[in-house]
Structure formats: structure tokens, C-alpha cells
Image (tube, rainbow over all chains, first blue to last red; front, side, top):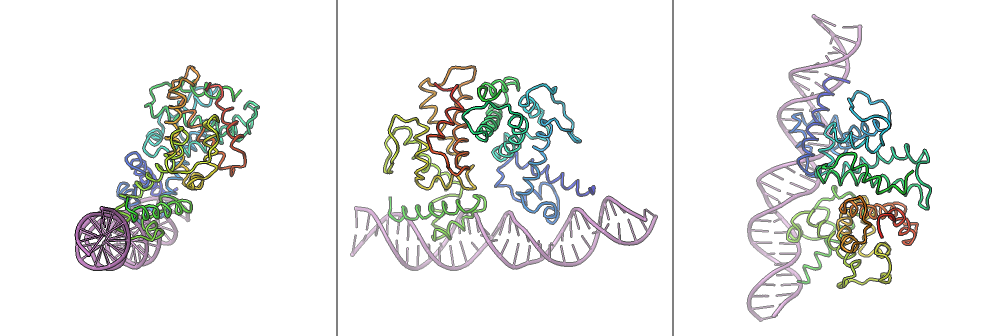
Amino acid sequence: MDRRQKKTREAIFTAFTTLLSEKNYNQISVQDIIDTADIGRTTFYTHFETKDFLLKDLCEELFGHIIETAMGLPHGHYHCTCASADDSVFLHLLRHLQENDRNILELLSSQNNEIFLRYFKSNLKRLIITQYADKGLLKSSSLPEDYLVNHITSSFVETVDWWLSHNMKESPETITEYYLEAIKYLVN
Amino acid sequence: MDRRQKKTREAIFTAFTTLLSEKNYNQISVQDIIDTADIGRTTFYTHFETKDFLLKDLCEELFGHIIETAMGLPHGHYHCTCASADDSVFLHLLRHLQENDRNILELLSSQNNEIFLRYFKSNLKRLIITQYADKGLLKSSSLPEDYLVNHITSSFVETVDWWLSHNMKESPETITEYYLEAIKYLVN
DNA sequence: ATAGATACAGAACAATGTGTTTAATATATT
DNA sequence: AATATATTAAACACATTGTTCTGTATCTAT
């Protein structure tokens, strides 16, 4: 990829991330992004069709990485100091979040957290299906499997949200305990 | 309240609700609302400072009613064909939703569902604190009470969301069973 | 190193939306 | 009927949007 493209793309992402930690997504104009990134108007629109597409691309970079890591797949070009492989996937994720790689924490705890928690959830659901549902690790119960998957996924996301709203006072280990306690009768 | 005010306020709410079931909140302009409600520009701004305030007022009307009902308080001027008082609060809520009073279902299952589910959650949390936490009905466990309240609240909202995404194929009774099964070890 | 391709900047644009002001009209309330 | 108040229509300055144009800077390949 052209050096210039990489630079502007990065400038746009940085500006966008900065703005997102400052104000509401809806209140961020393309003009704001252009001014903050200090690029030409035309340039923005050659890179991104709309603000929504920019958001989508940002989320894919953010959560693609964190989920890919948790999947145990190669990490690409990112550095990762995560825990050993035998930890719970959930503990793994929390530790990864705590590292605040790519400022994901700032976004997850900003006033725009809902947007990012939604993306987090949809990616996490895929992970849970792969790591739990497809391996038969969900307790057979009277509950439909997709209800169960949704419940377990949502509960983790809500746990993360709760943790963030408490300024992450608790350790990832404690949070994992809370979460597993809340769903322990549903997962083997 | 002046008859004229009531009429325009209602016209604005109706227009807004219609638009919300059609397109994204962010893509609805004040101009759209004005055109749909067929009112003067000035009139809108005398009633609502911004689109956000309109949304807030709408949500308060919607969820104020449904939660008030579930609280067992007088229903005000609304008609309600809800089940008997000894039903679970949750069954009560689901039945109330099923009646689709004030088109709340349309909004909860529209592309703007997140907005309304958020309001639903914040109101439901108050209800759960009043009906469960304050009455000592939550199982004493290793979990902090606010974590537990949040988990139970979120799980119900997620259950409703799941139900809606399934076009409410299941009965309120079945959904209540699912939900209670998912949290049964946490509530007495 | 040069040539051709590509990305960027800057300016201008029509179109749309915003929030406010003005003065006139219509409708309630008493 | 008289007064108060809600609504209207028009105009406004301003911001944002998405596109088009031309010229310039920077890359890539040979």
C-alpha cells in the first residue's frame, strides 16, 4: 500500500479516535475529522464513503485483532503480552483489554461505549460459538442453543461494561470469577 | 394544558414514531419531523429544544408507563389489560409488551432498538432494585449486589431483544421460563 | 534518474439542514 | 367579547455535505 495512503488513513483513524473520546459520535462531523486530521476534504472521501464506513473499518481493526488473538490464531503484526494459553478465554480477553491496545479501552468507556460494545458483542459471539457451542461445552438444558449463546455473550459484554464503569478497580481474575459465577450452571 | 399544545405534541410524537420505525434516528432530521407532523418550524422548537430532548420525552412516556404498571402503582389514564397480580413481574412485563401499547414493540424491534433497549434497561433496573434487591430476594453470593442487579437486568433486556429478533414466536410464558432458567441460581 | 501513475490540496458548488427572529393569524380561555 | 397564547410563514446567517475541478506533490517501476 502506498505510503501516502497509509499515512492519511492513520491520520484519519487517530483524529476520529480522539474525537470519539471527546464527544458523541452523532455530533462528530466529517468536517471535524478533516480539520483534526488536517487533510483535504477530497482526501477523506476517497478513503471513506461516509462516517459510518469509517466507524465500521475502525471497529474491524479493533475487534478483529482482539478476537483473532483470543481465537489462538497468529496475531499478525501486533505485539501481544497476553497470558499463557491455558487461561480461560475470558480472562485472556480481560487482560488483553487491560493492556488498552490501540486505545480500545478509551472507546469502550467513552460516551460512545454502546457502539463499541455492540461490535464487541457481535465478534465475541462468533468466538463463543467456535470455542464453546461447536465443541459441545454448553450444558444441555431446556434452553435453545442460540438463546444460551446469546445469554453467555451478552453477560460477558455486560460484565466488561460494569467493570469499565467501576474504573476497572477489580483485577481481571476477580472479574472472571464474577462472570463465571453468574453463568456457572450453564457452562461445563 | 392547551388543546392546541396537546395536539401538536401528539402530532410530533406520532410523526417521530413513524419515522423511527422507518429509518435510523441519526438520519431523521428535524425537517423530516416537521414535514411529517405538518407543523411550522417555529412550533417544533417551542415544544422541543432538540431532537434528543424529543427522544428523551418519548422514552419517558413509553417506559414510565410500562414500569409504573409493573410497579403495581396506579396506571394513570392508560388502559391496561395485564395479567393478575400474582404473576411474575417478568411475565407481566412480557405480556404488557405483547399488547404493543403505544407502539413500543415497533420501536424496540426497529433499527433503533438499541436506543430504546437502553432506556428500557435503565427503567427496569430501578424496578428490579425496588422489587428484588431492596426486598432481599437476591441470593446472597460472592457477587457484589450491583453486579448482580446489573446482570439480572441486562439478562432480561437481552432476553426481550432475543425474543423480538425471533419475531416473538414463543409465548410470554416460554420466554419467562427461559429467562428464569438462565438466572435461577441467582434469585430466590 | 526519469516518466508515468497516483494521491493529495484547495477552492468552489449546489443542496440541505439548523436554530432564531419577525410579524401576522388562528385558536383557546375566562 | 376581550385577552392571552399557540401557531404559522417567511426570511436569515450559518454549518455541513458530497461532488467537481485544477494544479501540485509524492510514490513506483524501469
